[in-house]
Length: 171
Image (tube, rainbow, N blue to C red; front, side, top):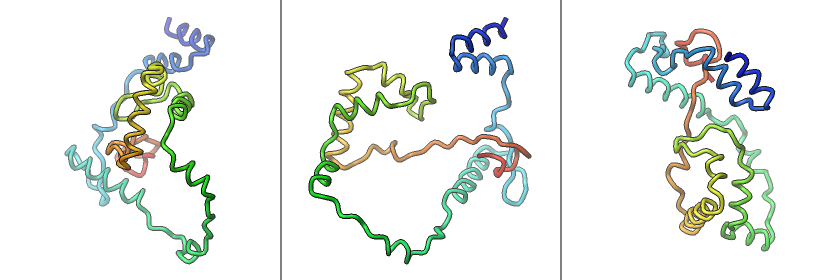
């Protein structure tokens, strides 16, 4: 019966439903948050706060690599001077039309961020949501102070292959 539902979803061109049914058919898997990991010396870490600290350490080392670019090369790059009109255009307040266009261009059926707000939800909100977003963006623009959450990133560990207890086996 579930196979028929999957086939029907595919025929209706509804991949989201098809994959949801496939995941349900496949059954749950052990969440990676609960898997013990190894520290840099190969010792197993069982404590959840110590595991979290190891992931922080791992991603900090992975993502904060010193630059290998020669500073002299950077200094030799010539910066193009903008016209007065272009400077004014780039410094202008955002418009309702820009917000409307940006929301329209957002990809549907994508996972939400930590705020749990999806592009589909913003699109479904219509003009009231566009106006509300416009007010937020205008306030941020005028005060030159960004919402703190906008500077945060959410890292999702995806297991690749190999030993699940090694941080290097995730992307």
